[in-house]
Amino acid sequence: MEQGPSSQTPGYLRFTPGRPLSLWHRYVARLLVHFYYSSLKFFTPNGLRVAPLNGEIPTLLLASHRNGATDGWVFNQLLPGAQFLTAVQLLRSRFLRLMFAGIPVVRDKDRQRYGYSRAQAGNPILHAIAHVKQSGSVIVFPEGTSEWGPGPQPYQPGAAKIVRRLMQDRCRFQVVVAGCFYQAPDRLGSAVELLVSEPLVLPEQGDASAAEWEQNIHQCLSHALDRVSVNCRDEQMLARVAEQAWNSRRAGDSYAQAFKQAEQQTLSEPVVAAPLATRSISDQLLWRLFILTLLPVWFAGWWVGRKADGRNTTTFFRLAGGFAMALLWLPCLLIAAIFYPWLLLLYGAAVLGWRRRGKFAGANLE
Image 1 (cartoon, rainbow, N blue to C red):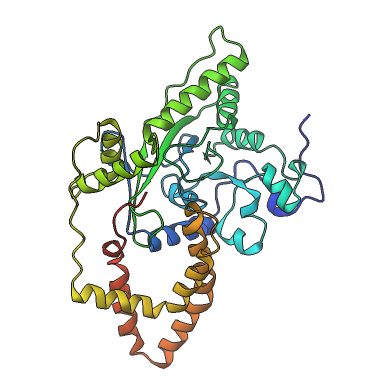
Image 2 (cartoon, rainbow, N blue to C red; image 1 turned 60 degrees about the vertical axis):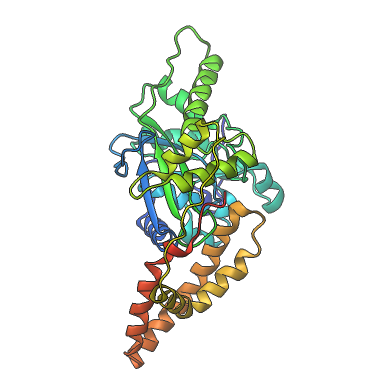
């Protein structure tokens, strides 16, 4: 029988099913996403705009994992009240818990690096099932890792186990899959799009055994994720598809849809370079004022970002370092404005520079 957390289990490893993500964590996610990225849009595979999911129907959102822990903040904008299956490495310090929460998952490397045991956090799959049964929604990254690559990493079976148990118990819920597409993955000002499916039609058990049924569900989920995710054969194809999608994008069109269309093409046509975003003298001046105003935040983000162990974690390290410094620096700016009100003009110019961040992000460098 699965053992629950013991009395010695830290509070941050305990999870209460049915409780939505806190307003604080939703606010932090929204703040960081809208500060760092120039735009965030949701599209169907047919290119139609999608509104955020309201969670009225308990939803299991299965998401592709491209850009480290910051993917969670992005997908939170699609399903704001949902809890996450969250690696305990993101919960191990008070500072990290300011930014992350969810259903704790103890991975093998968490046991080796930090000394956690699975018994401390309980079974995350059972927690997720209990949460959905109590009308909650859950966001799951089935790859279990955001290692950078031309296509998805192997999908883990946990999501299929959750779906099979919920179907077996005849619960009311829906499964939606979504893929993320970054035009400039590790740059401030990148545009981001999520490709969002309709609720999936899941295979019934029929005459299959429980194991066979679960495998059928796993295959259904895997195929659905492949259809909405970056899914190239190799690095060369990834680079060419990203470039073609960038160059073919038109105002108002879906970059994610252009990317998936480019995946299906032969890619034998020559690629025509897209024009760079126009940067006037005023744009460049305002951008430099923005950098100058938040210089300590920029420096902290740059310095911490150097410690990233891969491209997929660069954005997270930058945002974590910048967020920590911002907690100290922003009160200083406020106090300075009280004594020197003319600084409000500088702050206003810096905000205008921040609004132009998309022009300085560059093309997709997948």
